[in-house]
Image 1 (cartoon, each protein chain N blue to C red):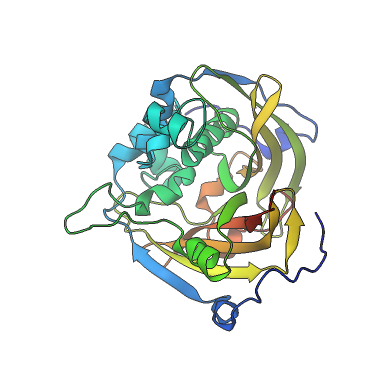
Image 2 (image 1 turned 60 degrees about the vertical axis):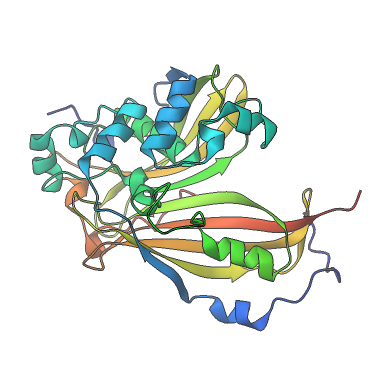
Length: 164
Length: 178
């Protein structure tokens, strides 16, 4: 079993290891098709340039969400369970860009059901520009025997709390 | 941003106000949740989470394989083509309805929140429904004059279990005359 992070291991102000990715046209097209987004601005450069006025094809939103999920669960391990994500899109990510994900812990709490939560501010950076930011609320085990995935009904309250 | 009242925006039609909180556009995805798209998505972002690759881990943690939570909207997106369809399907139809009814030709999605409830499992038939939550008074932003609105897309499985909610905040507007 992969190592896992416990709620008590995390404190406000902690930072996550950065993740750097060189974006290619293949990155964009793979992500668009895997997310069933057939719109041409995500696979047809001529369309993107002539119709959308962008410099190239660009990452679609659902694929960016998948990148954010991967980044957060690389850190938590498989017992980390996403509760909520709030995205703000500022600008697009294109082939040739080097995107860097970084994050800071902004809050930790245990809710009334005993679920341990961590709030993160995550940024997708290209150079000095935060192209997309995402406030994430993720549940972590509070002790070795805890498993956030086993929670349901009133035991799973992802809509409560601060993130977003 | 300014809250200065304007006279150039029409009143919100009564039938739009009547739709606030009402379920619209309930539709089922075109195919059951399947493992191929899960692996394709994980491969596209190099996601090595064993929950999606190792059946033993999935059995231990989630009582069987599940989909990555952020794939929630994937399962109801229409095929690029299907027999008999002559017009492309438009996602978030409630949003485009509002643009027309409020006579606001431009719109942006200013934020998007996804809340994840029960896990999506292999074989689930996911259906979605749209709910208009609110329409604001007239506002002026750097984009122009318009209104904000919030639309929730709720996702449920074949047992009516809530899988998640995507909440879109949009700003529909008219460009300022130059």
